[in-house]
Length: 378
Image (cartoon, rainbow, N blue to C red; front, side, top):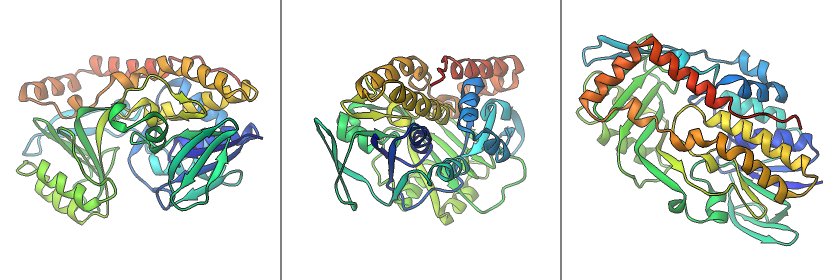
């Protein structure tokens, strides 16, 4: 029986745990956060490939039961007048669900058959002929046959096994923030732009959603106070309801700020260590992250089962299949679309939103990228 350690209890990690336990592996999932994160932004699945994997996992009906549904969002000017509409069909894909709800579904399906360790993190990985010796911040050291990093774009596993983040993550000139706010800013989801800045309320991503042009920022990703200060500076002097929204942000207890960045890495595996999801494919806010993670988990686990214990062959085939499929994450960047840098580009974006032909074409292209993989039956 293979003994596998997965870092990250978001989407990709539990999805991989689902398949590995089905194939007879002994799985431990370690997560730095003290518990599952509830709620959060909406994530979506596009096209038949994504839906087929959810169906084979046996969770498609659960996801549909909790789906949020694509929500149209008004683009407004500083006086609240509607300029255009961002279609819920475009932003929500074929199936949309809150990230926390999806994470909980996956956790509940896998917790009886694998070990979850919350509030802990890997501190070192030492590969030996017989496995990977792992030390942790809190747990006693253990040895595993394989280790998988499903711990996001700032992957701890990637740093330990592949080298520093600066070697593999490319900043794309934008940051985004998701904030839970209690105040009601109207029943209709709305978004407002000024060059290089977007603020939105009531939309699919979060009660308050921000995208702004910025160079790399240095801050503690676990310090909400620092993140609030960055947002306050970035949105100072912005029109519409922004000052009221920022007051609500200051009172919020749940703020998530991150860069829009790409992962540039030549391989998804190093020895007995592999990468899954944003840790290997990037985080460009283009609506493909969760789909890539779930499909990637299916392929990685399937290839490990098919290889009959040969992790080298399994990792090579996983990489061969997934390099082309994951290129959408490497080539995308939602920042310039959501927060165009100049007034002329803002006008052009809004004209695009008014064109049903162009938006329909973009939706079809997204579905095409999402289905550009022939799924094996493992």
